Amino acid sequence: LTKNLKPGLLKGRLSEIKKVYCKIMVLASLISSVILRGYLSYKELETRLAKRQTVRDKGVYCKKIFVR
Image (tube, rainbow, N blue to C red):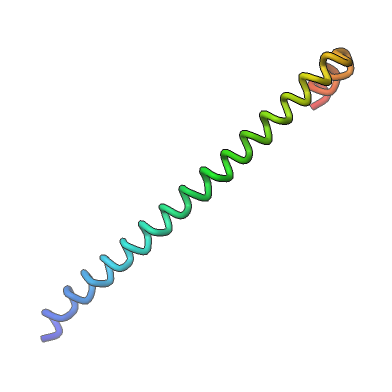
């Protein structure tokens, strides 16, 4: 009896774990994509502002880049 029960229980557990894992992975990918998009848009905004600044004072901006 125990031999027959354990594999079935294990399989059930594994399928549950897989479902949970899939949900977690989907959520993680969604969250990461949102974060990445936000980060990229922020970077884009930063570079735009930086470009505007370069038009104003190229020398200072170049120094800033090289200091970093």
